[in-house]
Length: 280
Ligand SMILES: C[S@@+](CC[C@H](N)C(=O)[O-])C[C@H]1O[C@@H](n2cnc3c(N)ncnc32)[C@H](O)[C@@H]1O
Image 1 (cartoon, rainbow, N blue to C red):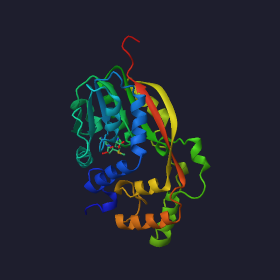
Image 2 (cartoon, rainbow, N blue to C red):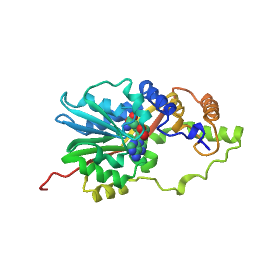
Image 3 (cartoon, rainbow, N blue to C red):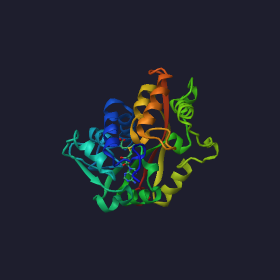
Image 4 (cartoon, rainbow, N blue to C red):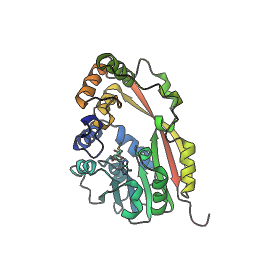
């Protein structure tokens, strides 16, 4: 049986188009991409890799900071995401490669001055990707990425000041009320997927060192959160046998109980790693 529309992945045009539209209308991915690109110190770069680059939002941030003669390669395994990006991104410095992040070293020339990965690393086979990044980076080159707070098991202090239930809580309540949805047991005993200790261990195993880590807060609104939840891969509830249409019905009802400009905060763990300089 074909998967129903709500579980379609990144290589679906519906997700790719919705994602690309979201990145144009709201700052979340461009702001996080800009932060990572700045930390990668691209002033003298000649080759920069945008890992899991999707529709190119991170590549756009890199292109803004990299010198005119630099080349940028955006690698992602979802052709649909890249198709959506190619329609608007025409910078001749940018090349798109459709391939898994784990196979990075087989697809890009090296050495690269920096590798940047926004909002994706925990979706990959992390030890394999770190080994591939080490292989392509020049000595002293930076590898900069972030991990969603829930996946890293961190939250910024700004996140605790929230008033009222989150949109996700309201979604679960309405799904239960209108569709008989049974929420999974609260995940207090579920360990985070990629905490800093695991990141540090995997980086070290791959021959890289951590230069800097920071928990950053991204301030947003209910309206942005709602728009993000309309992207098929992110629509909730993620369990249960819902169609995308049903998820959108639940989302609209949940959103009606909130105030659009209510402030929301998303936490990220940002990691700046490096392939050590030779001779150290
Ligand atoms: C949330 S999007 C981020 C895209 C882009 N970095 C941005 O900030 O807009 C996550 C991307 O990771 C890609 N992805 C996930 N796992 C991957 C893997 N193992 N190899 C390559 N790409 C992957 C998906 O196809 C998707 O385009």
